Amino acid sequence: MPYTPYHFGPSGLVGLAFRRWIDVPVFVLANIAIDCEVVIDWIFQPGWPVHQTSHFHTLIFGAVFGAVYGAAMYWIRPLRIFCESSMGWFGLPYRAILSKMIFAGILGVWFHLAIDCIHHEDVQIFWPFRMDNPMWRYAVGPHLEYIAVLRNWVVAGCTTSWAMLAVYYGWLIDIFQVRKQRMQAARKARQQAAGESSLAGN
Image (cartoon, one colour):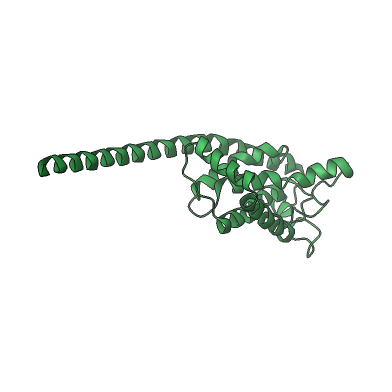
């Protein structure tokens, strides 16, 4: 991506949509953490390419990075507390599960790669088996003058996903609030019934 924050939109949307199976904060943050490779390149090896310093932007090494990252988010207590508190701040139910967080870490990195390999020519997604980026070449095709158009479409898709994420999040909050109100009403009704039965017994 031109800038890493673009990944927040699509990763947040997908993470919330599949929150039953993947850990949302780990999935979203894995999409961001993987770009530490780009930062490392800017510091120690300025220039181009920027996605080949430690080969995190590959399916194999990316999976390893994602698994370690997901496990660290669980085992390092402050990070786990951060995940719990962040979801609580957004008003969404959450429970940290190790296997779910590892799975989310791997999928988060791969989801990042799926976007980057279309936008960036230097991503060697199938390294060490292939040193080129066949996904980018397939997307661009024989007409290299369309590279800018393709990148604009990717950026537009990520930007649109931000708007979709906001709408979907608002819808989820409404659902959880209605469910919470129903649970509170049912609990109050049970308490009233228990109180009436005790008075009747007396």
